[in-house]
Image (cartoon, rainbow, N blue to C red; front, side, top):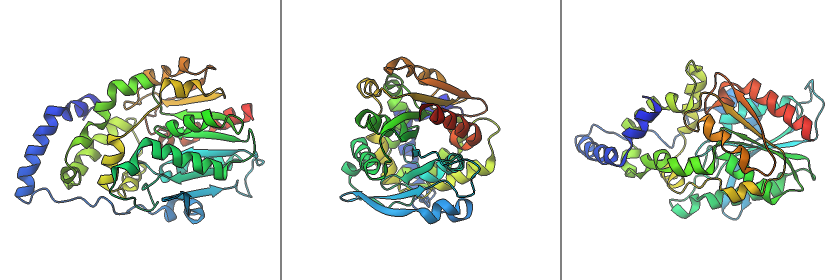
Length: 334
């Protein structure tokens, strides 16, 4: 399914049709629940150093996150930079999706701080309470995480993928003395988000029992390549990424997406540090043109790097090039 077709499919009228059809299927026993909420991806096998370094940390009262802090490997060919990179994942994602990028940045001599957001990945499950999943709560979590693990003044760079760009911009605007620069990957402008918000979040207006069905999981999995990945994507990498997201409860997904907040113009005006925008040329979820609209919204013109043969998941599709351009940016500003 193409991106456009998927958006039409989840229009308000289509959602009503899905709900009606699903009611019949459930009544006939033909729409069993999926296995959502179960961990089926083994980080220990793919990235053992990250898995073994992970620890549970209550960064704020009642907000426990799984945090990974790794210094550069002793055998690295690169001299330790003394720079800490905070690597923030996207909406209802998890740190493991950024491990390919984070590992390469670590090998280039940087200290890495990454994490599973509240109720994400292997962080403890959160409550069935909508108030726990607002964007404001997630921003406060990242502020607390940064305050605890940041290096000295001017020795921190924030790297945010997709929704992680919201967290990164928020902290950069508040911590001007400590944050040396910001990298936004697969981000989009406030105006573009406002224009497409219902298209992006619309499916989560369906009842929870439909979202939890096996048929819905199959539908979303089938539509994911066109939205997030470049044609010719590595099937193993894609399959691993699908497995990574299986651990999330559908209540968490629904609660987060229906309350999703994005960047606004005032947040961007507060960022006076150097900014690097990295974008996959084939991104259909947050198209390149929308990312380019971010450029004039910062006080200082950002640098922009476009990566070919990559889409929204550029961090998994082209981690070598992504890491190289981030490393060059960090070396130039620190």
